[in-house]
Length: 297
Image (cartoon, rainbow, N blue to C red; front, side, top):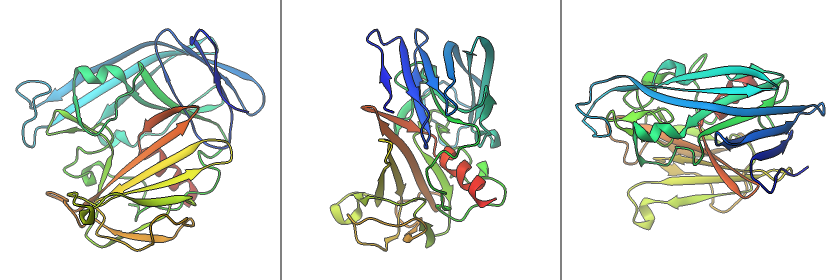
């Protein structure tokens, strides 16, 4: 069943489906979500906050080479009349977090708009347009209609924050202490294989050295039967091993990575977006990697 909004735009209505459900809320809005068992879940946003825990910057939002800034953001929500507070910290190992399990749903608390008071956003868009961004799925269901293959070689247990470029380039991590990182960097030696995480309907370079750009940036697209469209990126590719504009199957070795414009550390830059109901939601690629680890078990 398709998602919809009421005419006043104060209640956002969504329904369980066999893939992740992203949404953004303003303080004035609430989500009415019908779970797989038919029960209604009412999700209200009460408050959001963001603050600097520590920084080596002389002044916020003014980058300094190798500066380090640690940020905390939080929200207060009501779910089915019960109040909860969710808190996250980045860039720390805790950036690779477990979703909250509340009232039979898994909740990924992705970002708050107030982060734009503390960080620039010139290193890739990542802040929400509304007060907060979340993603949810019913407990017991995968975020994806098919098992997700490891996109790249995965460290044992979980991703490691020290392998995110210089230890700061996780989702929204402050590059040079001041500039939110619009993606997830994972350090790899040049030539590291990348495999298709799920079947793709289309894939191609949207930037490349051959086109005159300074990087090789690749996009893959999957349109699920439920109407959700997933868009993934992998950048800094050394070599694309497949013909562009062709579908690819899950697990296919499509590229060698970490070879173009990699800076101080050979690495791959990953992005994850979902387009549905006329909106595009920018999401932490960690959510995909979290499911990869689940599917390996």
